[in-house]
Structures are given as C-alpha cells and as structure tokens.
Image 1 (tube, rainbow, N blue to C red):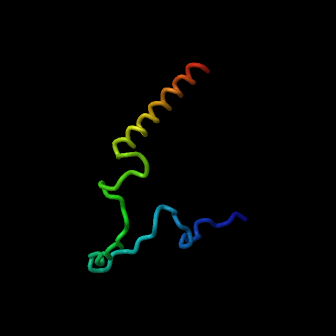
Image 2 (tube, rainbow, N blue to C red; image 1 turned 60 degrees about the vertical axis):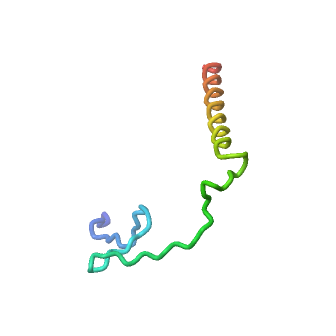
Image 3 (tube, rainbow, N blue to C red; image 1 turned 135 degrees about the vertical axis):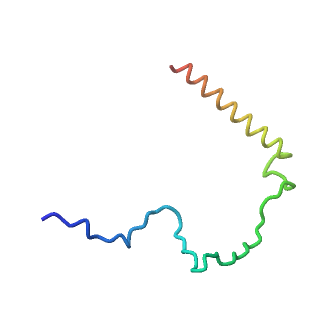
Length: 80
C-alpha cells in the first residue's frame, strides 16, 4: 500500500528562511526595543588597518583589482 502523504502535519518542518519571529501582541504594537550594547565600531577618524590613510588603502585595493583584471585578460588571450 502507498503511504498517505496528505495526512502528514508540518509542525516539525522548518523552512530555513531566517530566524523565527514572534507574532505581534493583540494590540498590534511592537514591544519597546532594547538598546544595543556599546561596541567599538570604527569611526571615519580611525586610521586604516595598514597604510597611511583610507585614500591610500582604497588606491591599493583599486590598483590590485585593475592589475588582476589585466592579468586575467592577458591569460585569456594567451591560452585561447
């Protein structure tokens, strides 16, 4: 006999699409938000992890990207 798939419940199945949320209370208002703890996020005045300034770091990143693009283009033409 074939199993009856129509009578199964899906209470134990998770969709896996993000965290579960709790429904809004009956009043329709969200509970007050709890403040986040203070963290040590970088501010624009903080120095970059390496290099003299953020502009110099961005120039290094952009230059590396352009160099890689040029190398890949040369490899593509050489090994076609």
